[in-house]
Amino acid sequence: MRIIAIDASLRRGAVSRSVETAAHAAETAGASVERVRLHDLEVRDCTGCNMCRLTGTCKIQDGLPGLVERIAAADGVIFGTPSYFRRPDDATRAVLDRISGYFASNGQLKLPGMGERHLPLHPTARAAKRAVIITACSAPEPLATFFGYTTGPVRELRRALESGGIRTIGSLAVTASWGREQFDSWERDKATSLGRVLAGKI
Image (cartoon, rainbow, N blue to C red; front, side, top):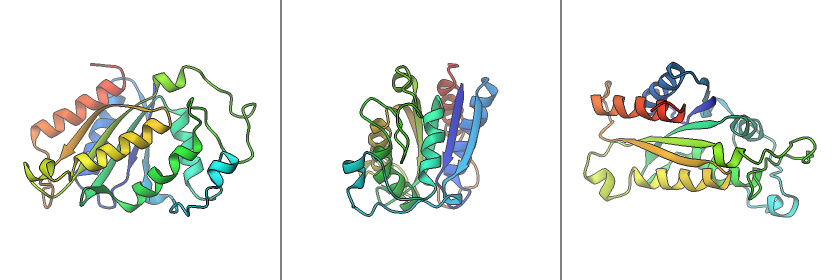
């Protein structure tokens, strides 16, 4: 079982702690986990050129094609992003806007200049690939849920991952995170459970 854990947080706060907890739990359950900090990569915004629709692949040369290859090679994805006024942060949005251009409707990976003989189709990959989503915001409950501060980013991430054949099987929303240095016990337990479930250990 190969899992990629993507941390889109600039600060090592609630999102980073939750992603690491889930990743560690998956490793303890026997999975191999690759950790990626999204802000260490150069991922540019979509320019709206529509070349992905005409040619089947995105023409922007940055860090996203390499990240997509690593996602495609994994069996599971842990994706953590902070929430800013009901939306993911800018780096995550750049990924969401462009990731669908790298996958066909059947989940086949598409990269510039490479066809199916370079990137063979694995029929079971679409059904097997799963994800968990982690987000955090500074608003407390019930405001966080009522105004969509946590549900908004989760919904957008789920849709984008589904476009690449990745099914979301669970999520964690950490609220009232501003200035908090420690987890509540239920947040730690939920992150641990998500990591174990993603690794196939309930």
